[in-house]
View (cartoon, one colour):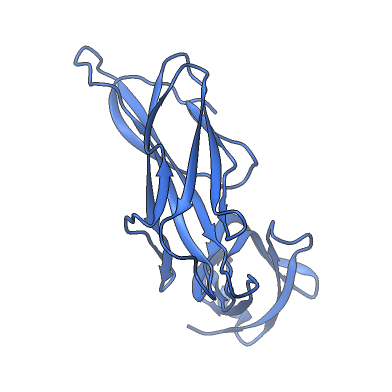
Length: 244
């Protein structure tokens, strides 16, 4: 997808996730996850300028945690990013390197976000239309040095008249990446949802699945299938639906 520049600047925030090489308007980045470990303490990201004019990009970092089902992302200087500000010529490329400034975590995976901001050129008062600024957000995962990283998911579900809310808790020490969820009753589909969601270690996320007369499932058991690119096969589980 290409997003054309046309005048005054507004922000579009794109969370880059699924494909191996993701395009976000006027530039692309690969890979779309950053993985750091003691064995590989430096990661390289390749940015490609897809447009016919120079592109200036600023790279910053955020700490990433989850509390009460919400993402918490304050700015941080825990990551070393080089270079933090650069210009890419038309159809050119730039390699940026990412490392950890602090000691590696011991037991639990560290989680951050790498933010790639497009820096707009000086405002031209002769242009009256809207010009688009892009912002890419890439997850950064830091492997613990004294434990084997592994996600472990626990499920619970509550029903209302219009939805079943699935709570996914990660009691493991590694993130879980979820791209789809399906509910079944005796192998018959009840609800299905495609999504892109991360559940960080020692955190939970709530996923509403719209369904008419959802409260009729209270007290009943449903089969749950979780799709994750981290495994070759879906995760199969079961859950008893409760009232709110």
